[in-house]
Structures are given as C-alpha cells and as structure tokens.
Image (cartoon, rainbow, N blue to C red; front, side, top):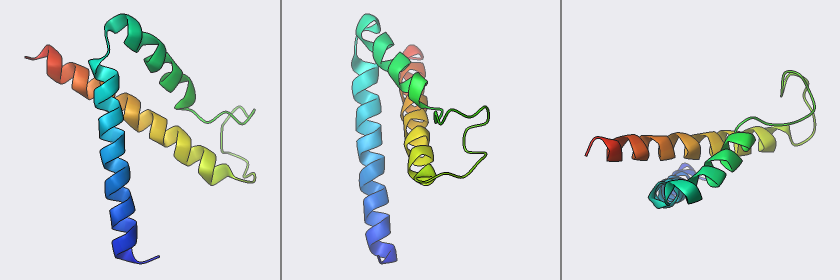
Length: 87
C-alpha cells in the first residue's frame, strides 16, 4: 500500500472517529451514559490476562487497535463535552 493510500485511509478514519464523537456528545445525558459506559468497557483489551497484551497471541494487534480506537472516541467525546461546557 502506498504512503498516499495509507494517509487517505487515516484521514477517513479520523473523520469517522470525530463524527462518532460528535454524535455521542450530542445525545442527551441519559442516552449518552450507556454509550459512554460501553466505550469505557472496551477501551482496555480483554484477553483474560492480568496485563493485557503482555503475552503475544494471535490477532493481538487487531484487539489492541480496536481498544485504542474506543479509547480515542471516548476521549474525543469528553473533549466535545468540555468544549460545550465552556460555552
């Protein structure tokens, strides 16, 4: 895959991540809480180990990438909510 193709995919992923965060932040607090809880439960990879990722397993990279993505979305939602509280 070319550097340009990778950059394009990363830009698209970033746009989708920001859109998701904006949509979650726009929910009412009662509707937002279960989504935030769901994201929070997935921001750490669960592999049955005390220290997730300490022992390499198949598909470890995909699981870590997904956990990082949930964490990033959760952080962006928090950023949006903070921005709104300052208005």
